[in-house]
Length: 153
Image 1 (cartoon, one colour):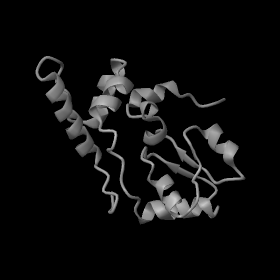
Image 2 (image 1 turned 180 degrees about the horizontal axis):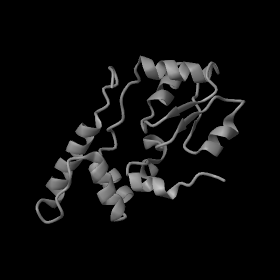
Image 3 (image 1 turned 90 degrees about the vertical axis):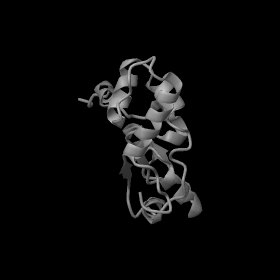
């Protein structure tokens, strides 16, 4: 990610998680893949995505950084309602932090109905993978998690 944020890549997050896993479990457990999606699937399949992977192997400060110009632009668009909604797959809170820097509160939702409830009074930020800051244990990392979500009829 562009500076000054410099959020680590998925590869870097996965490498760090693997190092942490190896330090904790060594050779006594199943070897952990170097791929972040495979790591998430492994722990999700064991029912330990929230309790182990997201809370013990991924550093809680991984997504803490100053926002960059892109975050500031999205926050500005939402705060001025130049955009009616923004949709993000990022779990970090950098757009929200950018809004704070612009002296406005970006309203955030992790479900479409919640986002719709904010409009038209506010232009919401819909975070479809969840939010690391408000509820990291519910963030979406494993493709199998998507099987829980069904489109409305």
